[in-house]
Image: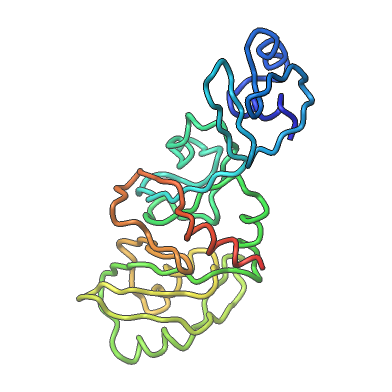
Length: 237
C-alpha cells in the first residue's frame, strides 16, 4: 500500500489534506524518514510513525454486535434508527453479514470485508444460525416433529418453499432453541406461523461456530477474536 493512502485511512484525511500533512510532519517507516507520498509499505509488518507516535491501521475490521430491538440493518433507515448509528465514529464503510429484523435482537457480524460478506451471505454458503424463540402457545410433539423434518412456507417472494430439516428443542414453556441451515426471508416467523403460533421474541445467539458473547450488552460490540476470525475465513477455503 502507498504510504499516503495508509496515512489517509489511518488519520481519516482526504487526499488533498494528506499531501499537506506529509509536508508539515515528520514521518518515518521502520525508523527511516520518508518524504515520498507513493512510498510502498507493508501495512501488516512495517512500523509507521508520525512525529514519534506509532500509527496503526487495519484494512479490514470485524466486529461482533449484540443488536438491540428497534434498530434496522439498512444504512438508509427510512426514518428508523440503524445499527450503523452505533458505529458513527468509525472511518470504515461497514456492513452487516446478513440482517436481523427491527424486532429481532442478538448476534450480528459487522465488517468492511466485502469478499467475506459476499461469500457467507451467498445462497450457496449460508452457515447455520441458532435462535431463541418465545411464542404465544406451545408446540405439541407432532408439531415439533413436523417442524424438524421441514414444512412448506412462502419464501418471501410468495413462492412455496419446503424448509430443510432443522433442529428444535424446548427450553421452557413456549420457549425454544431453533437452528436452521438456510436463511429465507422471515423464515423463523413463517415456520411458527405455519402452526398458527405467533413469535413474541426472537434472538439470534449463534452463527456457525460463533456464539454471541454473554458479556455484550444490547447495543455493545467488540472486535472478533483471532479464533472467531480464523473460523470465518476458514469457510472460504
